Each structure stands twice: as structure tokens, then as C-alpha cells.
Length: 567
Image 1 (cartoon, one colour):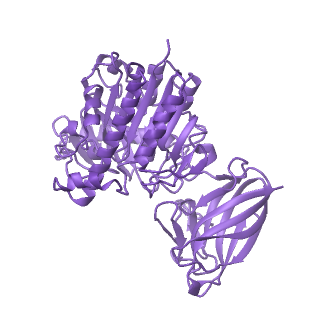
Image 2: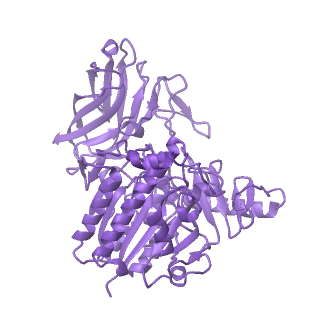
Image 3: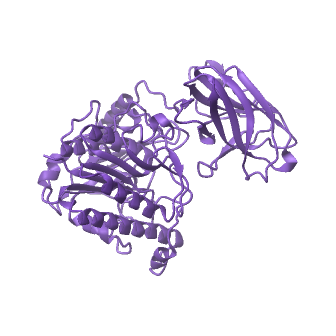
């Protein structure tokens, strides 16, 4: 028979506690609350502590450290092109596939949602966008676009139009909203609602974003109902990590980026009218990696090899059942994952957070550390986590993939500041084994004597600053897929009083220099064509370097573009 439609809704940074149905008396989420009542709810469902890792696990069914993702920025938010996604599996099953929202698993062609199985893709590559009203950091398929209205409304309307265009074929709609992730922008009426309740401004804005999103989810669900699709549409709602609000926390400890319950426990509602028992609550633990095998089971599709998750379909059908997992694992580190990172492991009852042990059955708020009383349990859990960590990291390098340049369908290629490795004058590094080497530090750290540094201002506005001494440089790893002549363009800011230095761009054996020109100020970026380089096919390093210092700081480098002009 025709498989059901699937709608997977994910909000960004909404905590387990940011729902009326979870005891929050101040927040207004009537649509989400009603959906919970109509669904099977997993009350012990877990995601990763931060967003890109959850998204990788969600779409592949694999622990995120296996997928190439290890960060939320610096290129570490790029999922391997060889990963098999839920969209690819369902597309082969005959589904129409769409994403409308936050991708955050790769910005370049080989790693974007179009290459990963989504035929209709209105998406953002970054962890957040700066303009929630009239957003201008979205792409439709691979074309940059501008939109009118609040981004939550824009995404909902695109999702509804995709459903209408499905033409009666089964569809998979992945709707990862980018709210309530900061910045906190929503219409004033939503914020005012919560200011009247006495919430601080930031909390009122976040609650307002959630209520606005709740309304838009209601709009989409009504659209499904009006087209007679309700009975044959599976709707899932979850969030991507712990919350960022503190007004009400349901007694949970920690928040986003933490491995305590407040950082990793998230809601999951699954509705299929007439098939799954409405109102059932399942306390058995489950995780983000389980979504793919579960939806494969619902769609009648085969599960790809190498999947770590387990199907929750038997539990959904019965509204009860035991967890398919003996253990669940959590880890997060801004730089490199290690056994010194923030990590946790839990079994059916106990949870070890580094050296702290909690009995979640009797202490869900993780207030009483019982590690000293239960050393055997501590050792068992630590041993198991160590085994798991060694397994998921074996043979893996945690560094950004090379940026492919020269694709006809992605020309020019934009190279952002956040992907750079910074390298100061006379830089030498010693490996853990004591061997001395030169060149960029593997962790992207500048030399101790260097002034060059990286400034975060929201992805598209990031800069590399502090260029003062000849030899200070930033480097990017490239893969030139077509040899040819390439035009180099740079965007930077330079106050008039500091103009006049020289910058050198080098790719492989080809190099060119240019005088750094004045712009309207340090934070006023202008684009300049630097010149042309003849590039050979293959791996290469792109280097931007101080060739001659000017009267002050060389520039604030924002972005670089490489355009292939021809042979």
C-alpha cells in the first residue's frame, strides 16, 4: 500500500521545559500541547548537547562523531558527503523530499541538502542567521535568495507549498525551524505578552518566538488537514538540544551545551492517527539516532548499513515497551573531542557525568552525586564510555574537509574566515610526540608571538584581524577539481589611515600581491579583485599573508571568492 507521508518538525534551542504540557505555566504553546496529547510521547528522549551533532545523528542514524561532524562552526559542522541520509533512503522509496529550514551540515556543494537527497531545499548553512525579518541568508536549492516576512512564517509557507506540489505522491518534509535560537527577533506583540507576565526581556523574546512558531506549526497542521492528509501523515515534533531559557527549567540541571539532563533531554511527539495510541507516554530512553531506523520502518524502506540507532516502531505501535538501548552516550567539545571533554553516559537508571554519578530514577534533577557510594557503577560506566569513544573516533581526523573549487555549478566558491587556520610569524609546532614541524597548527591556534586573530560576528560578518607583521597568515585547505585560470576576489575592511600595506595570496605554487585599499572603516567591507592565478588540479593550500606591513593593521579580512574563468 501507499506509504504514509512524514513530517519531521525540529525547533532550535527549545528546551524540554519550554512547553505548557511539561508544566510551564507561563509559556503559551497550545498547538504543541495538543499535538503531544494526540501523539505517543517519549518522556526520556535524548539529543546531543548542541545542534549540528543532533542534525547529523537525526538524518543518518549514526553517532555524530562517525559522520565528520565534530563542531558547530569552523568547518566542523560539515557532514561527510558519503553519509546516507534519511532523505536519500526515502527518495529511493518513492518519496518527494524537502527541507525548509536550518541545515547546518555543510555549506558547499558536495555537502549541501541538494546533494544529500532533498529535491526541494529552502535552507541556511550556518548555525544561525542574523536577519529573522526579511531573511537574506537563505538559499533555495543552491541559489541565494531574499524573502519577505519573519523567517518562521517564510519556512512554514514554503513547507505548505511543497505539500501542495507533491501531486499525491508520498512526501517527506523536514522542517527544522531556526527559532528560538538567538538573535531574539519576533513581532513586538509576542514579546509584550510575556513582559506583562513579568518575564525579563530576553526570556520574553524567546518565549514569544516559541509562541509564534507554535502558531505556524498549527497553520501547517491545518493545511495538512484541509487537504485530507491527516490520517495518512506521520507527524514528529522534537527539539535539537537543551534549552537556553532559565525562567522555568522543570527541575532539570544544565542547559544547551551541557551533558546534564537540561542539555540533552528533549521532547519527542509522534502522531499517526489510528495507528499509534494517542496520549501514550513511553518512559523508556531513546535518542536522536533512532529517528532514521524508525521512519524507515514506517515507510517500508530498508535501513542503511552502519546505522547505530534502533527502530522505535514496536514501542510506537503499543504505546509502551522497553528501551532498545543498554546505554546512551553524550559528548561535546568546542575544539577536539576527547575523554577530557564534556561527556556523559547513562543506562536504564544511572548516569555518569565525567566523575559524577546520579541515580536518575530517584534524582532526575541530578542534585546528589553518589559516585563515592557506588564506585563499581562508576567504573562500569566509565569503562563503557571509553570503549564507545574509542570506537566512534577510531581512524578519524577532526578537521574541516578541503573546500572544493572549480565546480561549474558552484562558481565562484565563497571561502569564509571561520574555516581558516591562523599562522603567525616564524611559527613552529611540536607534536604530542615531540617532533617539530612548521606550517599551520593542527588546532588552528596562532603562534604565541602572533597578533593575528579571529573575530566572530555571525558567520557572514566574521573577520580575521591583527595582521601586523610580514609572515602573519591565514590558510585554507582546498581541492581544486578543475585546473584553470582563477580570479581571486577579497572582501575586507581597512580604515583610510591604515591603508597601503600589501597582501599576498598564494595557492600551491601560484602567488599574487595587491595593495590593501581603504574602505569606509574597519567594519565596512568592500570587495576587490586581487588578480588571477593559474591553478593545477588537486590538493592545495590557499594562503593570505602579510607581504608588507602598512601604517597600522593590514585589514579585517572577511571573505575570499575563487572564480574559475577558463582553462
